Length: 296
Image (cartoon, rainbow, N blue to C red; front, top):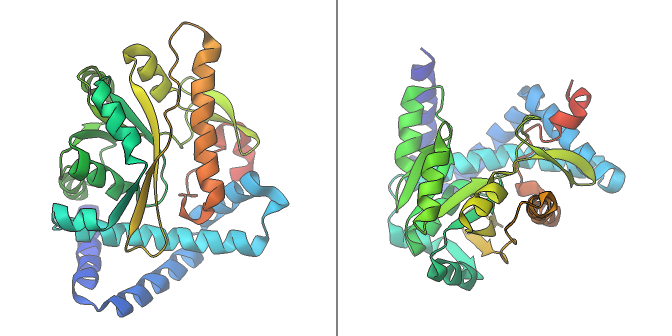
């Protein structure tokens, strides 16, 4: 029954995206975003708590509300782009994306040591892997299977276009290690809360959070290169994908070496978010592990 509902809702929105004039579609997206903000009290509260923890009184209440509303718009634009990308050609996809500092990735590929793209739920992260695969060649990404089998099949098909391989989050370690040892590239989203036994405590926006050590641990095992990469937009029509200088990988058993690598990942993520906070996905309970009472 739920599968039928999800498929019907997706089909209806797809009809809007493919048939409506652009101006009318934008109005519809804005309308649905307002409805989401007013009805979805749970995620509106989570986003507000996150913004309060991150910026405290350094950001006005009006600006925080504005960002939360933008988060709902961003989700709808993600879905819009997802639908458009189902049939887009490689040439048209690459026309939508401008790459910055691509020499960083090109030089890393030449070393054949493997590359981890360290990124976040920021901007249109779904189009990011497609663009990298279309321009530079094979890349693997990690994804959790959706509860809806029908929607999961649609998602997987779209995510695996243009040289992109999707590894199931359950048991992904073997595939990641194989890819890196063969000199391939893997994209990792590192901005979500983790459990106490999985995450490492690091400062993030001045407060301790549990951060995944996965990228640093894989780099330590394989000597691969960690490259931060983030995508942003001003108009949801064109995107800027920027590669940043590699983060030093831990090369010994020194615990501090591992912590330094993890902290550097948190710092670059924070810097990107601070620069344009309305593009981060504020609906994750990022500080839950250390500030659980704030979300109640």
